[in-house]
Image (cartoon, rainbow over all chains, first blue to last red; front, side):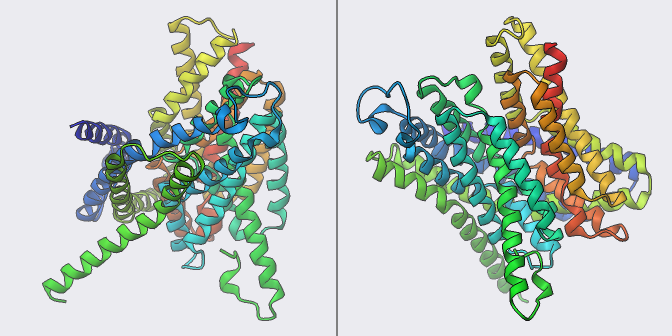
Length: 265
Length: 252
C-alpha cells in the first residue's frame, strides 16, 4: 500500500514537472506556429513512457538507494570508524578520513553512470557525431570527473580550505584546456558539467556534504556543507576536455590520420 | 515481417533496453554492497524492499530511454524546426526564454535549496528570521535562478543563430563568477555555486539538447556538434552570477 502511495505521488510530481513544458509547446504550436505537431501517434506514447519511467525510477531510488546512501554517508564520519573510539579527535587531520574520500569517489562515479540526463546527452552526442562519439566512453569519462571532483570536495570539507580557491583553480584549468583541446569536443565538455548533478547524484551528495560537515569538529554545515555539487559540475568538464586532448595526441602520433575520430570519444 | 516476427523483435528490443538499464545501475549496487558488507560489516536492511526498488529503477530507466527517443527528442527537434521555419526571431527567443523559466521555477530541487538558503541567511543574521521574510527571500532566490536560466537559454539560442564561439561566453562567465565572488556575502557563495548544478532537471536536459542540436542542424553554416551543444552549460553558469547578484542586492 505504501508502495502504491509513493508511486502515485511520484507520478503526480512528474506530471507536474512536465505540464508547464507541454503547455508551452502546445501553446506555441497552436498560437505561433499554427501547425499541428507531426507524429502525435509516436509522441504521446513517448511522453507517457517518460512520465511512467521517471516515476518508477524515482520510487525505486527512494525505496532502495536514498535511505541506504544517507545511512552510509552518516556512518562514514562516525567516530567508531575513524578514530575507533566514541568521539572524533578535536583536531582532525586530513589523513584520518581516507575512507571518506574513497567512498565519495565511488559513489560519485556510480551515481553519475545511473544519471538519466547524462544518458540523454550521451545518446544525442552519438547521434550528432554520426556514431564517432561513444556514449559509454563519454559517460565513463564524465563519471571519473565527478568521482575526482566529489572526492576533492570532501577533502575540502575535512581540511576546511576555502571553496573559492578550488573553483578558481578549476576555472583556470578549464580555460587553459580550452585553448588546446580539439574544437569539436569543447561545447559537449562544457555541457557535461551541467548534466551530471541531477536526480540520482544530488540527494546523496548533499547528504554526504551536510553529514560530513556536521560530524567534523569546527565545520559549520550551513557554510561548509555546500559546494560538493559545484565540484561535481566542474570536474567532468576538465575530464572530458582532458580525454579529448589525450585522444587527439594519440591520433597525431599515429602516421595514418583518421579524421573520423578527431574529437577522440 | 509476419506478426510473430514483429512481436519477437519488439520483445528483444525491450529486453535489450532492460539489460542496458541494469548495466547502468550495477556500479551503484556494487558500491552499496561493498560498503555495507565489507566496510561497515552490516547486513542489508529490508532486503525485499531493496530488491523491489532495484527492479523499479531498472524498469523505470529503460522506459525513460524509450520515451527519450520517441517523445522528448522529437518534440525538441520539431519545435526547433517549426520556429526556425517561421523565421520570427521574437517567437524563437521568447520560446527559449520561457522554456528555461517555466521548467526552473517549479523545480523541486531548487525549491528545497532556496528554503535551506533562507534558513542559512537567517542564521547568519543577514535577514530577519520571520516566516514572511524567509519566504520572500526564498521566492526571490527562485525567481533570480529561473530568470537566469531563461536568459541563458535565450542567449544560447542567439549564439547558435549568430555562430558565436561558446568558449568566449563561458570563460567570460567564469570571470564574472570570480568577480562576483570577491564582493558577494560569504553566506551565499556556496549556495550560488551549487545552484548552477541543480537547475537542469531530467526532463529539461533532453528537450534543451534536442532544441539546440535541432537548430544547429537546420541553420546553414552551423555544425550540430560545435554549435548545437552549450545551452546546458550556459544554464548552469548564469544562475551562479544571478544568485550572487541577488545576495548583493538584498544584503547591502
